[in-house]
Image (cartoon, rainbow, N blue to C red; front, top):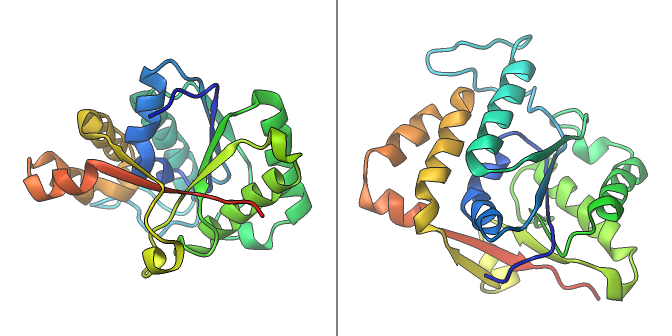
Length: 217
């Protein structure tokens, strides 16, 4: 994995970073600064813990604390909160959202951005987040555009997009991924228990992280 000047991660929800936590941790170990813009606090999530320990009123604060703990476990020191509302990213003012992303790109000058692939990421917030990132980067002069590596997991994404351009072996960072999952107690208690159970098939599944590099016309 090439060392980057700066990595910018733009995702809509607390816990979205868990799926790429191995790659993020690997960049950090290489000495690359990482900035994470999380657009919402996931306040509309349905999971309240098992057994439930959150409610609709307390969930935003709990998920913010979980996000901060996850970032500490990964090594992310620069966490930015977008302040947008969960499950409404597709309805936000697109120019405002793109400006927020553009301003951050101008501030940290990333050589690599990680986000969701619009149209292939299942959740409307995921798709809208990725589309806003792509839109913001597309406005930059071609020579100034950072590489954008996208997460995709919709059914049939490989048929539509081809094989992933980047496949990272993150097996040495499974402990980091587990800590990141465990941090999101309200959302992932069962999944983190399964990964911690030393199941070889689960470890194999979580040991690889895949990305598609967006190609601008």
